[in-house]
Length: 203
Image (cartoon, rainbow, N blue to C red; front, side, top):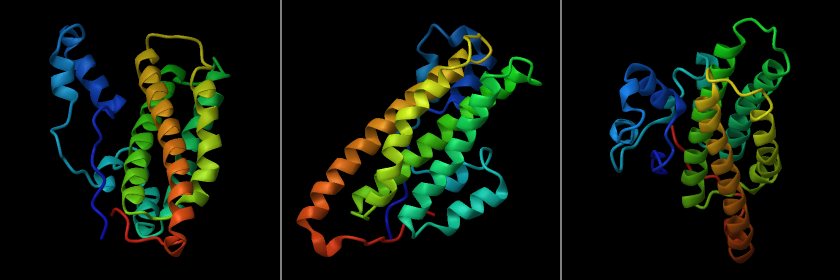
């Protein structure tokens, strides 16, 4: 079985940091935010724990069922992320939408958390040399479109912080997807006997 995906240094979800900032505004300018938000080194988190509040029960079950199908699992994460992207796009273009600011903030935070989970899964599958080139071929160009959509809504203090965190996550995901795709093209060109293998993925 593959190792469980771990929280990578720097991948701090907007939800966690947002709670800290809202609850303890005096920490904004101090070192307390980093200390409270940074996970302990080496902590392993199951994706089911991470996405508990982001995905519906049905969506979480779908992710879990694909633990040993890397390509399908990555495509499913991409689908769920792009559902949030589309919601952000619609809300950004409709200033009269009900609870627009809070809804945008929530969607930005969901985007960040799902992007973090996707990156953990990409790391896990790649480290085990699971062949995920087919998924990455679609994911790489998709990630390049995310920042423009995330930036479309006019600036507002109600969601600016969550959006900045989402933009950081989008850039990180895009860079990682490109890096892994290029690495896998080279790896499987040299190890043709391993092409198409899945392995056992994260639970």
